[in-house]
Amino acid sequence: MQVSVESTGTLERRMEVQVPAVEIDKAVDERLQRLSRTVRLKGFRPGKVPVKVVRQQFGQQVRQEVLGDVMQSSFAEAVEQEKLTPAAGPRIEPINVGEGDLKYRAVFEIVPQIELKGLDTLPVEKPVAEVSTADVDAMIQNLREQKPTFANVEREAWDTDRVTVDFNGTIDGQPFEGGSGENIPIVLGAGRMLADFEAGLLGAKAGETRTIKLTFPQNYGAPALAGKQAEFAVSVKSVEERHLPQLDDEFCKTYGVEQGGIEQLRKEVEENMRRELADAIRARLKKQALDGLAAANPIELPKSMVDAQVRDMQIDAARRMGARDASQIPPPDAFQDAARRRVQLSLLVSEVIKTANIQVNQTQVQARFQELAQQYPDALQAVEQYRTNPQMRRQMEAAVLEDQVVDWLLERARVTDKESSFKELMNFGA
Image (cartoon, rainbow, N blue to C red; front, side, top):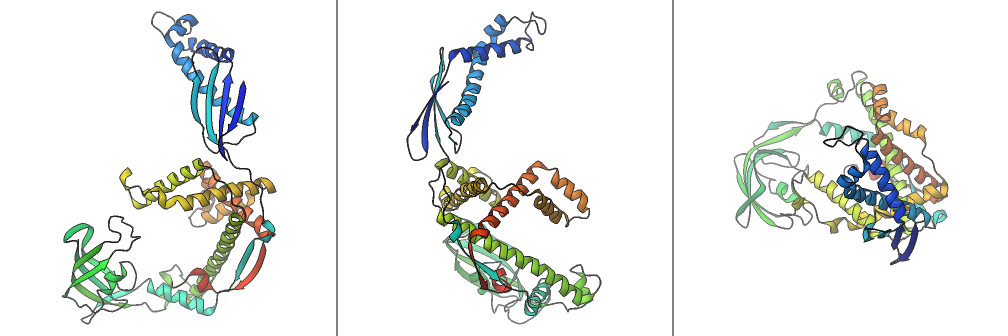
């Protein structure tokens, strides 16, 4: 096999491969021989069809199959021989696929060579915070606010009231999809409707009708409405005042605390908050380590890898939005920056793994599975199901390996402590 490689860009390569005709002919003969032992043709007993007859019937088809297989296998052999790492599959351009030697051209991008820099100067601020009594009090109050009851009132509506309305919206006098509703309960101040819509209901009373005018945000989830001015005719059906539950044993039972009352609830809440705080601190350290790694190591990115990442992000966004056809898939431009970051970090993390010879810690993988399984009644069975699911195991191993990379980076980074608070780190109440 003859191979020649030409650089046509920083990362693009054009490689020509020539495979001797004798190898192609040999592969075709071997496949025809195997086919003669299994093919069924009228007038011949199974396994007794002459190769000559098989060649007449299937020779061209078999040759095409062999050519495809040889191009695939010879490309893999050629890039290994030339010590190249393709970033994605090649674009194959046949030169000669008739009689004689097989010749083709493969155009592809390679993964860039990376020399890691700045690992011992990565700036990282480690948040230092505790869960205070006031933090626990605020969380208990938050739990109360998740279990409200409502009672009808005759007064005007204010924040925290629940207002039930019918509404019909129009844009330029025309109704639009999703712009109307009946008996829709809205808790004022909860932020589940547009802020201007909720503000337009403040001071309203049951039986009142109002007109609310607003402008949809430019980043609104429905692109067809983004930036549009709308007018809503609103009929107020009822206004209800919010009442929060008492901190008693019955309240505690709604959160799974059967014994110990409020003291036990506070204890469990505090333990959970400490876990959340540790996770939040870890997340901030991880982000800083990876951000620093990316900033210290700008690299040329293969367009093919970025394009593939953009497509994956488009499909994922369309799935989350409930898109029903291709016309609803978000445009690619919105994902370019995020896709480039993902590709860059993927390449850099892979280089760290190779440089540091990091092997996935199976003990940590098993611990993660056990942690996940605790939320199921039969934890042991859940762990076994996780462990024996190949896809889930690969995902968990990838997550653990990335955490090991972050640990390796943090060991070398310049880490300084920064005083913080639970509320700040959790954006509690934001």
